[in-house]
Image 1 (cartoon, rainbow, N blue to C red):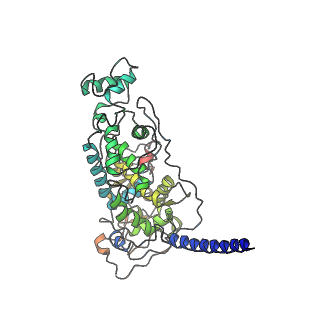
Image 2 (image 1 turned 30 degrees about the vertical axis):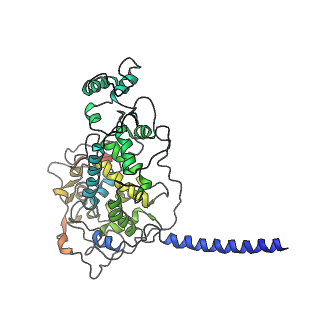
Image 3 (image 1 turned 90 degrees about the horizontal axis):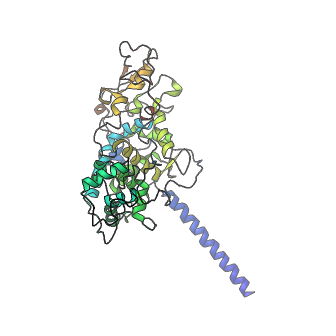
Length: 455
């Protein structure tokens, strides 16, 4: 009987402790990312003091596991091999291009500064000593493997020729090998020191550094160029964002001071997810130094039911980055999505780009960012259609069915944004005829299937 009584008492205590734990879990849920105190950051990032109505998303989300990055990804072999990039989804292009054009004023300089600082430090990193880490893809080793032992050597300490001679030989054996790109890329021996000294996440494998190179070496030259290395820094370290385990270059300041506060502003119900509607309704209030330029909210159609033509832009961003819950992105997906977009638009195999040669901004916008070319071409086909010269959320309702009242005492000066009176849509170029708005505005040639992804 005593045993039974003790069992009942223990059961009651366990239930009580479970109830306490459940309550604590519930309280913690309220404090999940998106509901923190970002008031100081919001003053710098947004033009209003409170969230507008209609920003919150519906609660129904079907969640699943995030399987974007698995440790068994990658192709391992004795020689480097070119492979498709599973993370390349045109994150910075397609309809998302206008989304990032709009965000450039907020993010571009900071993100590119981080990319450049990280790349400069990585290039300056000395390789690990050969007695500590054997470089798997030295020039001599690759020649030896490509030629089935007829040329080269497996001993990196005793090269069979000058680097220039060896690189020239490899170029005849591997069509993907470009000596200039190889010479300006990060070797596995350098990556060994980077992982160790910067506190970046390691992986479990017989040769983890070689496996990392194999995973992100898309051009198959045995090293990581700017395009590959910066992508690796995002994908590989995603679990280290804001972690004290990371010592360098995990985008800490950028995430803490800009990305997370912007996510939290859009996620007003604090459930840790945002939808395209959340972004569309909250982003008009981002504080941008030149509100009239590259403004996706300026394209307003005369149809009352479909005023916001560029609603596809935040929707495209969500679709390309949503993994855990269809139609929504969580905080980490939002972080990665922003970084992916800038990686996609401003890096290639040879450089971190400072201009818009890859982003193609100037093909989408005229008058130095004041004119949405495709939008104006569409409006030109609609009799009497007009477009505001500037979209200012303080004085002009957003292009939704809800109007948002201005906030008394807001420090944002509407006059600084420029005029707000509507102006007629720009007419077609002379002799253009009935131009299809999906034609290239400069050549009047239909945009091909690959080109349309970038406009």
